[in-house]
Length: 572
Image (cartoon, rainbow, N blue to C red; front, side):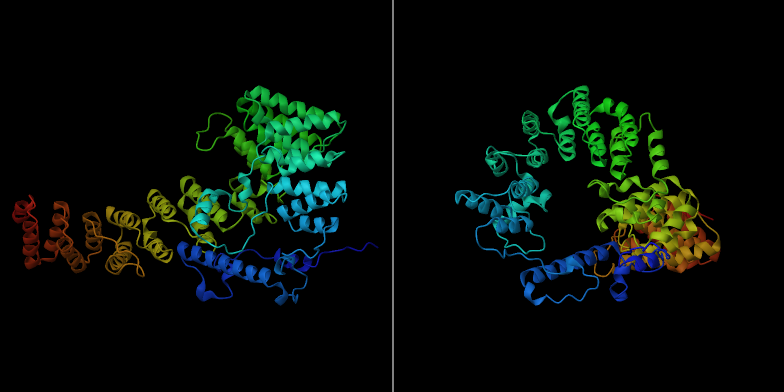
């Protein structure tokens, strides 16, 4: 008999696979306190920021005062919930102390200790020196930014924040391989550097833009009768488009590197495939002609594409914002290829391929994890829903709308405007009152352009009496938003168009008295009604036989000095 070894989470994973998401339920993060469940996009943003702030504060206290958080209650053990050791425990100058600082990612402390060991004549093993080179070349010759640690803010630090705003996780991304930097200096001290030593240096040079230096260092590696490893070749392939100008020259250099891999018997991997495809994005028409042959060659070596591969492939044929010109079947081929498959991240670029996935793919396996954080998920759902509004009928749109909103997605006012346009196109304006309730719940009840568009749709055509009644109730509810605002937000201002639409909706529902009260608001807000509106109103008054109100209407028209006043007087 064979014993099957399962992880400690296997039972939970099996149970989780038996249920699907309930679109009517709140997100799992909010179920502990339903009262605080966000109902609008702004509330959700506030919740997310508050949650992240609380998490960062907790991590700060755990890391600053680790001695108070030594009891581990979690079963199984969850390393990220336990305090990290931030202070070095080994104080003497030794190789063990150097290893400790490397493991703690203290770049400057590790370099200083290495120099002390050199000055004291204490030998450092090649393996430990290579680890130090890996550290320096990855973080760019400076300590990585400590997460969740509050900073002292002054004018100088604020200026630095503005400069490094795009590199918040690691200010060292602005580092460049200057002459005699620590990585090159320590490498030069090695009497017999090996492949690992060269690989660390070359990868660091490519990462921080020293592309020509990377190829020179690779030449030195070959001159010393050494062979490069696969990570070195991957880095050089990525750098190939940076050292050549013409498309064919870039491709020839990539081919040359691949041939050298074969000569040195270095087996390519998935990252090699993605490095080639990423480089082909910079090769224009050459990239389009070589992309599929590269994928075929790699498949012959049992290397299947990942999400990043497909992302690079689409980027080769379709440039962002540019119209499709030929090769329109490429997208369909990619979607057919990925449909029904479950993907796991294998490349650092796999996590950013949001637009590669059709929504159904999220239900396969654990593909939903590839959507990324809340911000990325919101981008995905916004674009997915906008595409639905452009391409599908109202029934399909509403199916996904009810499934996603608001359990996982809080649509923006622009997306809700797209939804109104679909209602108009498919002649389902009877759903407007329901959408208005959602607009208020989502915090869009004070978006003037959106509200005015909704009023215009209700006023444009007369519906059956039942629908007109719901329109009238909706219109009066909208009036309350103009009068009181939305929970302290800036109030909307009446325009002649919005007042006219509101009056028209009420008249169509035979709410003449309510319409009369709205008509008075024209004078209150210094707005001028149209002659067409007053003519429509007079028709309704005549049907009821209210002579006094008819006279008041003529007086209102005369008060605004409308040229159509004589016609109102002469109407039979």
